[in-house]
Every structure is written in C-alpha cells, then in structure tokens.
Image 1 (cartoon, one colour):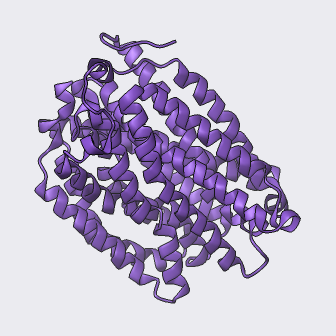
Image 2 (cartoon, rainbow, N blue to C red; image 1 turned 30 degrees about the horizontal axis):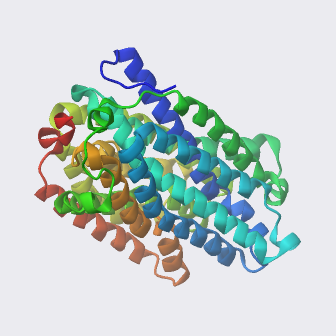
Length: 431
C-alpha cells in the first residue's frame, strides 16, 4: 500500500511522523540493548580473562560496528533518494531484526569457541549497517513530513525515539535485575532476553513502516533525470558536507559520553552498583527525552543557531568541571543532578541536529547528504567514545578524556559560529 503525500491533513501527518518515529525507536532499542547488556554477555563470547579486558573487547566490537554506519548511510541514503524514503526505512528495520536474532540465538564461547565471537561480530556489523542507514533516512523523512512552522518540533522526535530506545533497553534491564532474574542468571542466559524482544519489535516496526505515506518532496523529484542519491551528486555540495561533519563532531561525542560511557564511569570510578548506575541513567534519560520537543519548538521560534551556540559554548566551558565534580560525588542523587545538567547542555545539539542537516541539502540528495557525512563522523567520534575513555582509564590518565571531549566540542563551536542559521536558508523550502 503506497501513498504519495501532496495534501496530508494534520492527522495524517502526525500518523506518518509517529510511524517513522516508532521504527526509529525500535532500531535504537536494538542498538542500545548491546551496550546495556554487554557487561552480562561479554564473558559468554570471549575467552576467560580479567573482566575489564572482556569488557574492552565487547566495547571494541561496539566501536567497530560504528564503522559499518557510513556504509549504511551510503547504502540506505542512496536507496531512499532513488526509490523512496519509505522503502529505505522498511529495509533497514528488517536488517536490524535479523542482527538481534543472531545475538539472541548464538551459542557461547564455551560451546563453539572463537566462532561465537565471529557470530557476535557479524550480527553487530549488520546492526551497524542498519542503524547507519536509519539516521539519514528517518531524519529526512521527519523533516520532509513536517510543516514549515513546526519542523524543529517534529524532527526533534528523532532523538526522543533514539533516547527512547535506550530507555527501553535500560527499563528491561532494571526489570530483569530487580524482579525477574538473579545476577547469576543474567550472566548465564538472561542477557539473551532483550535481543529476542528486539527481533520481535522490529517486525512490528516493519509492518507500521509498510503502511506509511511517501513524502511530497520525494514524489515531486521522482521523475527528474538528475543522478539522485549518487556520491557524484553529493560531492557538488562540499560546504554542506563539511558543515555536517563539523556540527556533528562535538555533539556526537558529548552524546555518547553522557548517555553510554557515563554508566561505566559510575560503576568503575564512583563504584556505584550495576543497579544504581542503571537507575540514575534511566532517570536522566527520561528527562532528557522529554526536553527534545521543547528545544525543537524553541528552534522554530528563535532559529537553530542559538541552540547550537548554547551547546557549543556551555559544552566547552563545563565538560571538565562536570567530570571533576562527578568524580568527587558519593551520592546517587548528586550524580543524577550533575549528569542531568550535562544533558540539558547537550539538548541544544540533539534536539535539532536532524533538521539542521536536512535543511542543508536539496531533496534529490538529502537522505545521502544527511546520512553519510553524519555516519562517518559518528563512527570516528561517537562510536569510539566508550573505548577511548576506557583506554585512558586503563592507562591511569582518565582526565585526558575530559580534555578530548572539550576540544571536540570547541571545534564544533567554531563551525556553529561560522554557519548561517539553516532555518532561514532551508533547502526544505524549495521542495
């Protein structure tokens, strides 16, 4: 069932945005289930050695999976620019389901040796491919589906669902930890449960996405003879490509630092229990998710640039103090407020980065333009965040990581200062 979207009612538009967002939610749940449960399954896939080395290997695979994201960004960006946003989103969610199922059903290292590591690695590469495609396509879809006056608000739901996926993974972990399984059972077989859930949810998302409207922007350009979705066409927009890289660099590193690495920091540096670290992360992320539409709406009123400058300036000033204060925090409540403060800063980037990127490219190259440079930058800076931080800690110079994050945010700040406000120069207005 395929529809075009020339004159959608508000209700149909909301339905389309919900359909696009729910698929995004499921994709990110599957992606984050890995990080949430890595601590429990790392000893199932690697030879017996000290736990930190096993964790390092599990997070190494997490980082390598990010290297598939640029390939996913290219592949699904091209598909979406050539044959439609809807088709790109539908294929990516099926691929994610398959990756989750592979992890859920894989035998352990004790049973099949190194082949278990290979299966985990392969499943993760499939998921990296899928999620790499997901970002560019769903950012494009949500931005094109939104009305001109509400673009910041509607496209902010990409990060609501992205964070939502992380929240569901943590919620399932909390339920399993507190009510259903012992720590021993979680280490033994309980870690498989979230991956089974992920595979099932992906099939639900596949059904929802199969019934979506196509965007008007794609339909209008469908019969044009330009090389839609090709790298050659993309390279005609070098300034936009470099802008995506520059604005993403500090943002993605800060995001992964405060949403993924922070949990390890609470356990290894503050010596909170698994359960305490999960509870604090969950509470902070819940508020963080609810802030995205507020910041998105604000950008519709005052422009995108002020929000990016808020993140750039505050992130440069406060990253080191945040970690310094956190490392001397002994109470869960203290840690909660410090992390929440950091996430309020990061919201200036997360809430609007999807729409800002979509506003930089014309329709015939938009999904590829948003997806590929973003995925490359995330692979280098976001995907490696946990690994780099853990490595610095192992070397005994943990504070070098805070300096690294600060410098990257500062470089992004220079880009924000130099760029025009994309709300005023938006290529989406040309559709």
